[in-house]
Image 1 (spheres, one colour):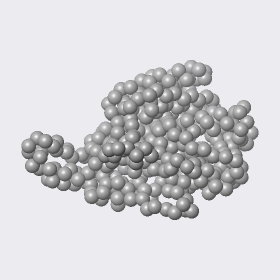
Image 2: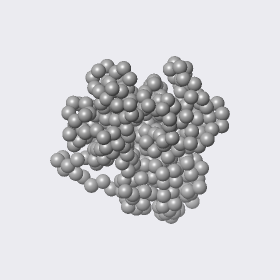
Image 3: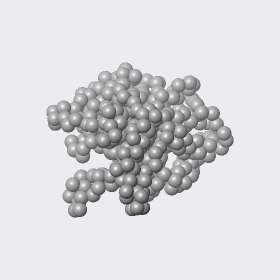
Image 4: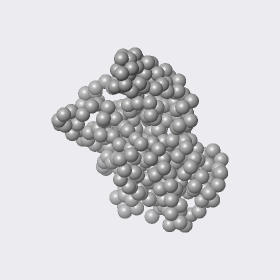
Length: 371
């Protein structure tokens, strides 16, 4: 039973923050902190903060800008986090609103009506709430019958969501599934941390996955897929509902995203490259058959290293496209956004790979062929 990625859709916030804007705010905070703590810094009881620069950010990550749900709050030196207005229970949640917009874009691209869809999977790094499920709220807003559920695997949420959709279609549970990945990530970012304040951006992406009989000869046939996890604390967030019950109450900063970037780079890159090559062998594919790798968009240096190991050679930029310059790291959405933006120029039969990797550790592969 063949399964097809029929179409994709994208939503971005209206506002974007450049590196220069972000750095100006961060450096103003550093100057203020160092002035407020001048005596303690002189005594050696407080470490001074170091300023950042756009050149440092771009070299370390490849990021030049990021979309955000609230630019003013992020760039307010006395706040440095987005402002989110509370909504009544009767109103569409912020995350659902973003996901619904991406889903409608995907449906329109395929010429589909919501009644054609059997299920909704919402798969993302951070859910706005635990229940009712975000997927069920989006299902209701879109007017889709059937069922919906939420899942999360951090950076691999998108690919793992796709694999679950494929499995449901192959087992006959559904013929058409919407995988929605709304990544509102800037609220979990510590904009006062020099090592990570530039990393995340907000986005939502959706994929319509269909049985090939329904797809009508359009889209991308799935040739194979795999998932892998290995526990690591090197990328972590301690935010959760138990925080309110912890005694003593943790510092707010302890709930933000943190990572050991050098350890992640050293451990994840070879793990992912080995997984991709092993999966290729399993599915009867070879590196030279891959016209394009749509890789997880966390760090340009990681992507370049993984792609070089997979191809076994130097490669052209279009063979492993990067969207970090515009979007920054969008967690579980990254590889799907890369696919959405850069799946042009394929003839029937040409192949590629959608691949995620990161927190967990987790990694997912979805090999596809243009119909």
